[in-house]
Length: 318
Length: 296
Image 1 (tube, helix red, strand yellow):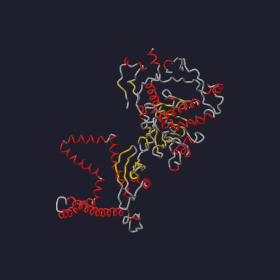
Image 2: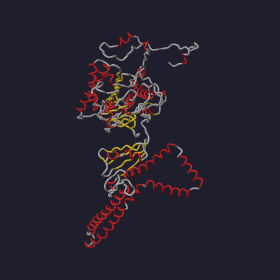
Image 3: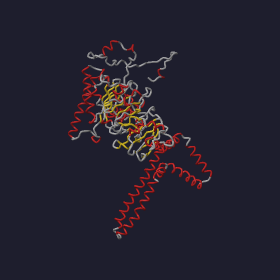
Image 4: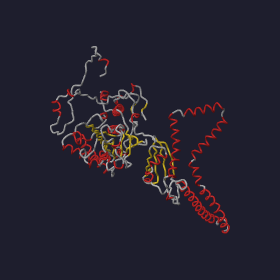
């Protein structure tokens, strides 16, 4: 995107003048400017506060000197934090992975010190074997994908979704597995909106190695709070049960309270004579009324004879 | 959650209540409520889809075999298991809602005069309820009123509005149903109606537009989908004609979100429907033969 390169690079996406370098430069400049502003503001505010409070306990001249010393010190600390904020932010983004890795390494060291080889082998075999159980494997993989898509979304925002002049990215909040993939909540910074993101939904799906991405607003009263659904599977082809049968008896319910239905016997066309239809047709009806065959005698077979002539009535439930 | 208590010995079953046998415990009503969200299926993200049906009317459309009756039976089953809820069922085919005949307060078959009679009664109930609400200085029924919810379910609406009876009867049916749909919502008389294509020759547009919720199952044409969902949703990518014919039960639902969303309606097979219907009939103990016999 040449218009952001600041150098009029006609090759557009070339490595020497590409979008990535420009964005990083903008982020770098933003960080330096923010640090400078934070230093000045913090110094002034801390100095004023210190002078105001200290003047109650000491000579105002001493209070002024104390403020002049304390203000820049605190301002410098804030400057450092703001200046290295891009690094801290990256560490924050990778906190789950870093924490998991540290827990795994130090946990294993502690475990190895506390147990002997046989126990360690049994535990490792049990943990490894649990991954052979499909539900366990699916759960673990779903959590891994949640971590994965948060990074991929961040890449999307940094690479092809232009945010604002300072290059700040949206807040990528919690991610959790869904039956079709993952659901991630994000909070937009100024410069982005739902329509803009929806136009990039296909690109986000590609970046997340998913089939489709659906972006919707979470709260009607807040346009910045969005939900990104990453779809990897289709669930609308499944059969859904309402679960109501779990609330009633499984079987054996007495049917004394149900009405016995008398089934008509005229179930085939030759069984229904023409006069019977005419008799059932109301005189005022213009269209063909529903067939309401007069209740005929209920079919009550008295005997059933098999091919060899044997009466098998007792073997059949009518 | 199955709510049963330990079954007493057979000889100690309280026969005064007409229970002659108990399968595995004393029956306890599931205690669902029409005032709670009703689960009707899942959306395309696998999340549960619920409806606040007690204060809304829903129109269900789609081609035969699309899943309309499945949704109707799920809604009816929930209502049958809900506390203090009455069922008024219209089913010209008799078999779609027939399993609920024993527990329905009114079951209307292929008889338009019966349908008119039931709708007139509902109209009187609605009038009385609004008079009661006015006396209470209120505008809407709520859960604390302990007044029954009367769920009206119509399967194949076209049979009553365009097929059965005389023209005068059909016009009166449309007029009465429009009134029930328009006024019943706030006084606990929600309406669920299903038809294949609710075009103007089947039901008047003024009646169709009163349904706040729409569910469009597979439609044969884009125009049919728009007739069910309303407005010009097909041009915005929401067309029920795109639904795979083999995927029965999938629909576009236009409800609280204001935008149609793809759902898969929950489905009860015949055995499950009769399992629930028999149990609820048993709980209601509509058959007083055993009670009379005991008293004698």
